[in-house]
Structure formats: structure tokens, C-alpha cells
Picture 1: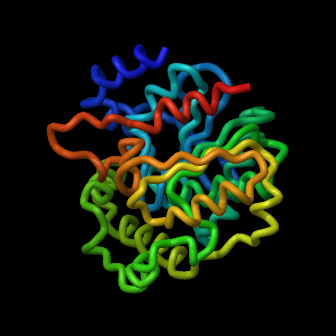
Picture 2: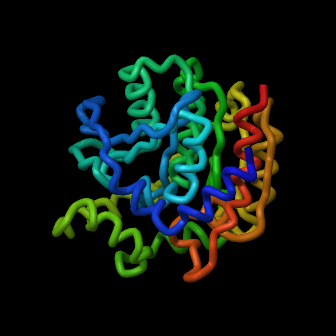
Amino acid sequence: MMKKLLALLFMTTFTTMTNAQTATGQYANINGLKLYYEVHGTGFPLVLIHGGGSTIGTTWGRMLPLLAQTHQVIAVEMQAHGHTPDIDRPLSFTQDADDIAALLKQLHIAKADIFGFSNGASTTLEVAIRHPQLVNKIIVASTFYKKTGAQPWFFPMMAKASFDEMPQPFKEAFLDINPGKQDALYAMFKRDVARMQNFPEIKEADIKGIKAPALIICGNQDVNTLEHALEMKQQIEHAQLAIFPGGHGDYIGELTSLKPGVQPLLPALPVVSAFLQAK
């Protein structure tokens, strides 16, 4: 099975990011939000939640078609991101978690696996805490639940983040979906930055209260410290930890990690697949 998945990767790497981002999706009216989502493949439901400033394609374009070989992948774009418009309410990880829960209920999905990257991993933790009855397993990638879990440079960097420093591929992906909407792009950037500048720490008791099997993954040069990743693994009762060479999202082929002419190896794929398929 893994050889088949890797062969598929090398045949489709060039097009998967575009295909994932331009696939015909659907909208769900959720908590006053017109939430965009896509469904790919068949099998046990697996929700994919992108990172900050991102879209389905920028975070998951390389992994999604491979995961969809064995799962019903439900990829979402959260408030103000990608196809999902912004509305007049706060942007928060708890609200995003409630939106995910409402979507699953609307789709009549009793339980799902949840896989979140970066900001999406913060949302995934909140889904596990706030809606445990909907969660089978969680995968949290490149995240921290308290400020001391971040690298020492992270929050000083966020304190002075400027729109000029936003990765150009993120800007292009948003404007491909929303042509001419520069104001919406800038508003999304400002909202994401403000959320991280005022990062809401999760109580340690809530982290320890997560009962779903969890896989914690990150790069060895990521935004979170390795000590914090180990701490999370020790605090969540049924948790596993995997650390991969590289930085933020390298191990899943996140768009800004790609190098021209170099095929992404996706070292997290076999680890994620084994975790999801384990009984």
C-alpha cells in the first residue's frame, strides 16, 4: 500500500496543489458562516485543517490525494481563509473548533479523525477538548498550547509582523480564489497576526483531559520547541510523538517548504497512515 501511495505521489506532485485548490467544493451554513469544504475519497472520515494564512491547497496539496486513497477526506477552509468569507465575529481557535463540530453534525458524521497543521493544530486540540464525542483520533502538527512552548524568537517576530513578510505563495493562493480582493487578503493577515499576538493558552488540565489517541508531529527546526512536543506527548494519555528533519511543514510538503525541482519526500505520510489505520 505504501509503495502505491509513493508512486502516486511522484506522478501527481506537479498538479496536486492546483487540483486540491480548484476542486469543486461545497458550502455549509455554520454558525452564521458560509464554510467552504471539499470531500475527497472514501473510508473513515478524516478532517484536514490548514494553517494560518493558508488554504486547502497550500497546506494539504501534496498530502490530500494520498490520504484520500484510504479515507474520506473532508478538507475545510476556516473563517476568512480561501473560499470561506470573513464575518463580523472574533477569529478564535475555539470558534473554529465549534465550526468544525457543527459541520460534522450537519454531514451526519458521528466520529472523525482530525488532522490539523500549525493554527489548524490549535483548532484540532480545541475540537478534542470541546467536542470529544465527535473525535476518534487527532493529529496535531507543528503546534504549542502555551507561549513557552514556542521558540524564543516566535512571539517577538509576531509582535512586529508586517504584511510585506507574508509568504508570497499564500498571497497568490488567496487572490487566485478571490481575484482583486486585496482588502480581504490584508484583513485576513491582520486577523491571523492579532490572534497569535494574543495567543490564548490552553489550560494544562484540558490538555491532560484529552482521551482520544493523539499523534504529535513536528520538524526538528520547527516553531515549537522539541521539549514542548515531548511535554505534550507525556501529558496526553494516549499520545505518540514523531519528529522529522526540517522546519515548519517540511514533513507534509506544505507549499512554502517546497524547493524548485525537488520532489517532496513527505516523511510524515507513512507515520500518519500507520497511526490512522492502527486499531
